[in-house]
Length: 441
Image (cartoon, rainbow, N blue to C red; front, side, top):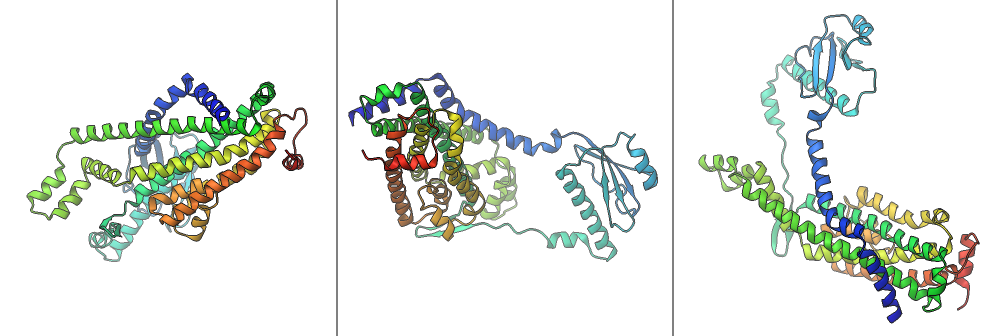
């Protein structure tokens, strides 16, 4: 055990002391928050930031003339020419698109020199459909204002009944936590597992391992590498979580202090509205929305979620790292690892894709439960399910299977590692690896 500890210490300290580790550890939360903030800003401002689109309209129906709305990045111009003349002159014009609307409204066409974006097509279709619908309703003698009022959407508030009483279900918060947790585990298993594999290959190729093996057993060397690099990842995640919580708290406090009293709430109060109406009105203002977000975050069982995340990261990492170490011991360079990487990464890729499309929408289905029990898929699948609530017995059973899966995988990997780490010049195959496993001590 003392020798394993020395290897752990060396692997841990040699990586933690690197400037790249320190820089990424402290910059990553800022970069992630900044990245998501920038993405949100760009998505919200995509119409303003997009290129200006000028559309020449040939409207034979007369239904849309002077009715299409100009936007910040779109401008309609109505042509008095015939369709044939406008189409012939379009190539030499300065217009981005030519929109042709026949009198029958059947076969509406959009011409452009370059391929039109899906968003542009969708926006024009929506605009045309709304105007056509309104025109038809007016022709039929139907009051569009009454119809619009009748079509007012209903907002659904999800409530959860618990032993302590009712509470907000916080469905979207659970979605966000599940998605972020699954993505972090998926990325970390690949990144830190690959580090173990590369470390093994480097020591094998440089023949340093021959000196090390004279002092420690192959199993001790493999376990020391796995645990040491795993502790590096664990340290980084803990620091990221702490820094992210601090940054989120500071940002939320600053926004709350700088916000003005919700105008909608004041109006509702002055008009004698009910407390519920005032609360709804307040939530529709920017500061009210921020308060609602902060309230949602505070309702999350942070300690429970973080503990589950760290457990599934650690044991999921150790399980996969044992297999990565096996591959590293079987090859002489990183190029040869390609034939073995697909079987290793396929369960991760499959689980991540199916979790983002099925498990997150059906957390209590039979498939979701089974995926959260199988050791090679549970780190991702279970972290998707945890924010939605998982029975204690399922969580305990999943944790037990993951620990047993790690022990079994490590035992199998160690039997191959002890032989493969000293094999040089011979290209490994699956048949050869099975033969190494069967060798006696």
